[in-house]
Amino acid sequence: MSEEVRAYGSSIVEEPSGRTVIVSSMASDSHTWNLVYLELLVGELGFDVVNLGACVPDELLESECVSRRPAMLVLSSVNGHGYQDGLRVVQRLRGIPELRRLPMVIGGKLGTGGPLSDEQTAELLFAGFDGVFDEKNAAAFRHFAATLPGGVSQLEEA
Image (cartoon, rainbow, N blue to C red; front, side):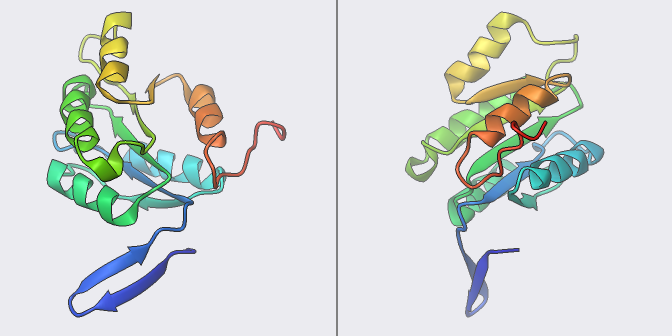
């Protein structure tokens, strides 16, 4: 990993590499297989990945994003509550000045009744997400991530 870590007493401060992506679920989602998949996918794109795991409280997500200043935040949900949780989380994070310009995306199984409607997707984008990807949009996610600074563009290689 290319991050520099300095310890000051009992707290650790990480210097951002500009290549770090945070992958996480939200508080209500206990699934982990999706996060492992995303960790591998994002790593293949040339980023260092911090996987916060399942059932991540909003406060932890906020503090990790503020302290690490990642190149992107990737939220994943497979329990069907990603739409509701995503609205809450993105509004909270966008309210923090340091995170207003952070690219944030959400994907997976975001609704309990199947794919989101166009209106629900628009609501997530309006609330502050830069991308909304359903469970069948891995190619669109790769394209989005490849446009970020710090990643390795694999679009020409594919």
